[in-house]
Length: 193
Image 1: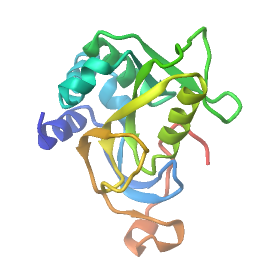
Image 2 (image 1 turned 180 degrees about the horizontal axis):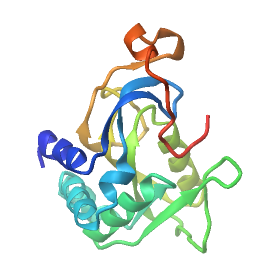
Image 3 (image 1 turned 90 degrees about the horizontal axis):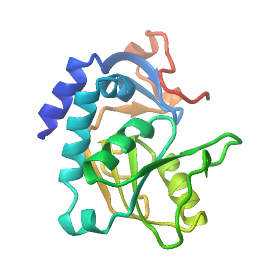
């Protein structure tokens, strides 16, 4: 899938939003990718997951024992990536602020894990989820994501394979351009500030 084909999927789902958005990092943007909307259609989610998995090196795909993803945003794409790889998929939750496995999920010692996210911006959630997998005994061998919003600058400590890289401008709260500041800011994501 080309970058334009991926963006066409977001547009078709009404998931490429324009306005004034407060990202989970606290930074501001005039554009937001609402992955929950693009993934709400099972056929589209499956297509995107297959494209994401197909761009992983073959030798890496063969090493994966398990797919893991951080809740909330990574659950659907992680599940679909598991389906595309014919591997089980689990997710991590933050009931007390730190990621942990719940619901009877477990990771065997030494199990090789592919971390899957919807969008990576700063990489903080990904790194925290990777740490939680390591604490559970697993070894994250790579991360795949639908979207890299980091402008290619994120360092997750493992190889990173985004399906598409998008470099929408982002601003610190006090550096928002006047035309963006004139638009009321909204927080479209799942996490509170």
